[in-house]
Image 1 (cartoon, helix red, strand yellow):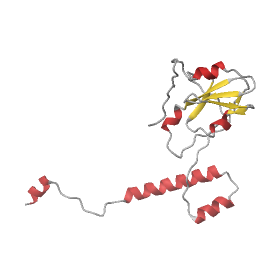
Image 2: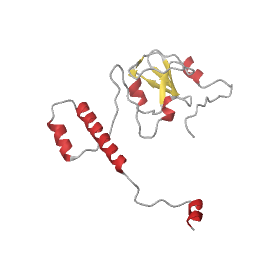
Image 3: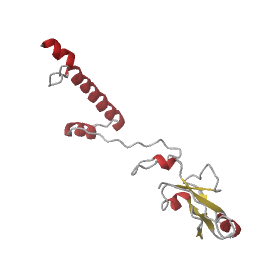
Image 4: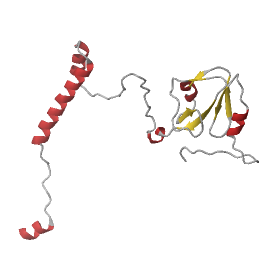
Length: 168
Protein backbone atom coordinates (compact mmCIF):
# COMPACT_ATOMS: atom_id res chain seq x y z
CA UNK A 1 0.00 0.00 0.00
CA UNK A 2 2.80 2.43 0.78
CA UNK A 3 2.48 5.80 2.44
CA UNK A 4 -0.80 7.44 1.62
CA UNK A 5 -2.18 10.73 2.74
CA UNK A 6 -5.90 10.73 3.45
CA UNK A 7 -7.78 13.65 4.93
CA UNK A 8 -10.89 12.33 6.64
CA UNK A 9 -14.15 14.23 6.34
CA UNK A 10 -16.86 14.74 8.92
CA UNK A 11 -20.60 15.07 8.28
CA UNK A 12 -20.29 18.77 7.50
CA UNK A 13 -17.45 18.13 4.97
CA UNK A 14 -14.91 19.93 7.16
CA UNK A 15 -11.49 18.27 7.34
CA UNK A 16 -10.50 16.70 10.65
CA UNK A 17 -7.49 19.02 10.79
CA UNK A 18 -9.76 21.92 11.71
CA UNK A 19 -10.55 20.36 15.08
CA UNK A 20 -6.95 20.89 16.11
CA UNK A 21 -6.84 24.41 14.70
CA UNK A 22 -9.96 25.45 16.64
CA UNK A 23 -8.89 24.08 20.01
CA UNK A 24 -5.85 26.30 20.49
CA UNK A 25 -4.69 25.41 24.02
CA UNK A 26 -1.66 27.33 25.27
CA UNK A 27 -0.68 24.61 27.75
CA UNK A 28 -0.12 21.75 25.28
CA UNK A 29 1.75 20.91 22.10
CA UNK A 30 -0.68 19.54 19.53
CA UNK A 31 0.42 17.06 16.87
CA UNK A 32 -2.11 16.23 14.16
CA UNK A 33 -1.58 12.74 12.78
CA UNK A 34 -2.29 11.76 9.18
CA UNK A 35 -5.66 10.24 10.13
CA UNK A 36 -6.78 13.52 11.75
CA UNK A 37 -6.37 12.39 15.36
CA UNK A 38 -4.65 14.90 17.63
CA UNK A 39 -1.90 13.96 20.04
CA UNK A 40 -1.21 16.36 22.89
CA UNK A 41 2.00 16.78 24.85
CA UNK A 42 1.99 18.69 28.14
CA UNK A 43 5.63 19.78 27.84
CA UNK A 44 7.87 20.94 24.98
CA UNK A 45 9.38 17.98 23.16
CA UNK A 46 12.04 17.47 20.50
CA UNK A 47 11.04 16.40 16.98
CA UNK A 48 13.53 13.52 17.24
CA UNK A 49 11.74 12.15 20.33
CA UNK A 50 8.32 12.22 18.67
CA UNK A 51 9.52 10.61 15.42
CA UNK A 52 10.94 7.59 17.24
CA UNK A 53 7.39 6.20 17.18
CA UNK A 54 6.64 7.29 13.59
CA UNK A 55 9.20 5.98 11.11
CA UNK A 56 8.69 7.27 7.57
CA UNK A 57 7.15 10.54 8.77
CA UNK A 58 8.29 14.11 9.45
CA UNK A 59 6.81 17.01 11.39
CA UNK A 60 5.85 20.29 9.71
CA UNK A 61 4.25 23.59 10.71
CA UNK A 62 1.35 23.13 8.27
CA UNK A 63 -0.21 20.17 6.50
CA UNK A 64 0.79 21.56 3.08
CA UNK A 65 4.41 22.25 4.09
CA UNK A 66 7.10 21.19 1.66
CA UNK A 67 9.83 21.45 4.28
CA UNK A 68 9.86 19.60 7.57
CA UNK A 69 11.33 20.62 10.90
CA UNK A 70 14.89 19.49 11.72
CA UNK A 71 15.25 16.67 14.24
CA UNK A 72 16.79 19.04 16.79
CA UNK A 73 13.78 21.42 16.76
CA UNK A 74 11.76 21.79 19.94
CA UNK A 75 7.97 21.73 19.63
CA UNK A 76 6.59 24.69 21.60
CA UNK A 77 3.59 24.82 23.92
CA UNK A 78 0.50 26.35 22.32
CA UNK A 79 1.52 25.48 18.75
CA UNK A 80 0.00 22.92 16.40
CA UNK A 81 2.24 20.70 14.29
CA UNK A 82 1.44 18.17 11.59
CA UNK A 83 2.76 14.67 11.03
CA UNK A 84 3.40 14.32 7.28
CA UNK A 85 4.74 11.38 5.24
CA UNK A 86 8.45 11.58 4.52
CA UNK A 87 9.11 12.09 0.81
CA UNK A 88 12.77 11.05 1.00
CA UNK A 89 11.94 8.03 3.17
CA UNK A 90 10.01 6.35 0.35
CA UNK A 91 13.10 5.21 -1.55
CA UNK A 92 15.10 3.94 1.41
CA UNK A 93 15.55 0.20 1.67
CA UNK A 94 14.30 -1.68 4.70
CA UNK A 95 16.95 -1.67 7.40
CA UNK A 96 18.79 1.34 5.99
CA UNK A 97 18.89 4.39 8.21
CA UNK A 98 19.43 7.98 7.33
CA UNK A 99 22.26 9.57 9.31
CA UNK A 100 21.58 12.96 10.86
CA UNK A 101 24.61 15.11 10.05
CA UNK A 102 24.05 18.51 11.59
CA UNK A 103 27.38 20.22 11.00
CA UNK A 104 29.35 17.02 11.36
CA UNK A 105 30.88 15.01 8.53
CA UNK A 106 28.68 12.40 6.95
CA UNK A 107 29.00 8.84 8.20
CA UNK A 108 29.38 5.79 6.00
CA UNK A 109 29.44 2.22 7.21
CA UNK A 110 31.71 -0.13 5.29
CA UNK A 111 32.50 -3.80 5.57
CA UNK A 112 36.17 -4.74 5.41
CA UNK A 113 37.45 -8.26 4.82
CA UNK A 114 41.07 -8.63 5.93
CA UNK A 115 43.40 -11.39 7.04
CA UNK A 116 44.49 -11.87 10.65
CA UNK A 117 47.92 -10.50 9.80
CA UNK A 118 46.40 -7.37 8.29
CA UNK A 119 44.24 -6.97 11.40
CA UNK A 120 47.32 -7.25 13.64
CA UNK A 121 49.07 -4.64 11.49
CA UNK A 122 46.02 -2.41 11.70
CA UNK A 123 45.84 -2.69 15.49
CA UNK A 124 49.58 -2.21 16.02
CA UNK A 125 49.84 0.83 13.72
CA UNK A 126 49.55 4.26 15.28
CA UNK A 127 48.42 5.84 11.99
CA UNK A 128 44.89 6.72 11.04
CA UNK A 129 42.71 3.70 10.25
CA UNK A 130 41.45 5.50 7.14
CA UNK A 131 44.98 5.69 5.72
CA UNK A 132 45.64 2.04 6.51
CA UNK A 133 42.32 0.91 5.02
CA UNK A 134 42.89 2.92 1.85
CA UNK A 135 46.33 1.29 1.53
CA UNK A 136 44.73 -2.16 1.94
CA UNK A 137 42.18 -1.25 -0.72
CA UNK A 138 44.83 -0.16 -3.21
CA UNK A 139 46.85 -3.33 -2.53
CA UNK A 140 43.78 -5.48 -3.11
CA UNK A 141 42.92 -3.66 -6.33
CA UNK A 142 46.42 -4.11 -7.71
CA UNK A 143 46.34 -7.85 -6.84
CA UNK A 144 43.00 -8.22 -8.64
CA UNK A 145 44.44 -6.53 -11.73
CA UNK A 146 47.29 -9.09 -11.79
CA UNK A 147 44.83 -11.98 -11.70
CA UNK A 148 42.58 -10.59 -14.41
CA UNK A 149 45.55 -10.13 -16.75
CA UNK A 150 46.53 -13.84 -16.59
CA UNK A 151 43.07 -15.36 -16.25
CA UNK A 152 41.92 -17.71 -18.98
CA UNK A 153 38.75 -19.77 -19.09
CA UNK A 154 39.11 -23.47 -18.26
CA UNK A 155 36.55 -24.54 -20.84
CA UNK A 156 37.23 -24.47 -24.53
CA UNK A 157 34.98 -22.25 -26.56
CA UNK A 158 32.00 -23.85 -28.29
CA UNK A 159 32.09 -23.46 -32.07
CA UNK A 160 29.24 -21.69 -33.85
CA UNK A 161 27.17 -23.27 -36.66
CA UNK A 162 29.35 -21.69 -39.38
CA UNK A 163 32.52 -23.07 -37.82
CA UNK A 164 31.05 -26.59 -37.52
CA UNK A 165 30.12 -26.65 -41.25
CA UNK A 166 33.60 -25.54 -42.27
CA UNK A 167 35.18 -28.36 -40.23
CA UNK A 168 33.19 -31.08 -42.03
